[in-house]
Structure formats: structure tokens, C-alpha cells
Length: 164
Image (cartoon, one colour):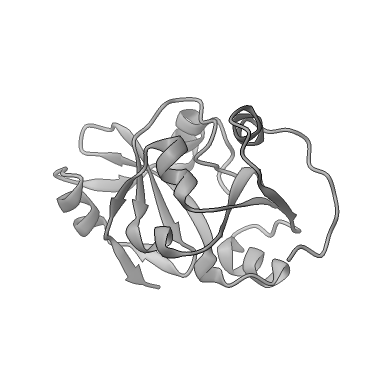
């Protein structure tokens, strides 16, 4: 899958995975500003649908939450708000997201965040055999079975995907 065999130093995400004795694969790629999941999937030769993005959002009370979404899909904010339930959900500004997660935008992992936040996962992600998700650094994904999102993060499945 990965064309590089570069070792990436520990991140809070990989520390948490190792602490829980979870096997994962490391996938390093050349980070491209605003390249997103299209760029990582292209470089790694992985379907963009299997690359999961970690989005830090907030509700109407400015309470942070994490949404895990397929790389080739967008979050329907209205549908997400209806399901969680909340009056309104919106993306956090990059500096606010970084403050909540402890990660730079573009390198946000749902594992090992600075603040404990509720995690919501697009339900169809859980049907995939394996996913690649950010490992806590720009240009670094980890491959895991999606069931770990439920086991380790207590992620709540939602149906809020819309086409890009």
C-alpha cells in the first residue's frame, strides 16, 4: 500500500494504539497543503472512500465533537445535527480545532486527542474491511479495522454522508 518505508516518530495517536496493544500499519506520504484525502489516497494507492478524515466540529454551545467521514464524502451538517441531536453543528476554525485536539489541521487523529470529545462515525465506514485514518501528523495515516472506532473511541454511528 505505502510506497515508502519511512518510520514515523511516536504521536499521541500511535502511543494510544500501542498502549491498547492494537496492531496497525503505517502509511507515510508527502503532505500537500489543501491536498486532503484525494492526495493521500492517490499517493498511497488506496481508494479515497477507505481514507477516513477526522473533522473537529462544534455544536451551538461551542462544545467540540469529532466526525469521522469517508474521504470522498462531505458531512451533511443538518443531518448530523438532527441525529446527535443538536440545534446546529459547524466546523471549528482551524486554531480552535487545534486547541481541542492537540493536532495541527491536516494531521488530526481521533486517537490521543488533548480533550476528550464525543466521536461520531459515518455508519457505512464500519462496513469496510480496513480503513486508513490520520496517525497524528501531516503525511501519516494508520491502517486499522474500523471496528476499533467503536471499541476504542466509543464512536457513535450516524448517517450524515453526502456526495462531494
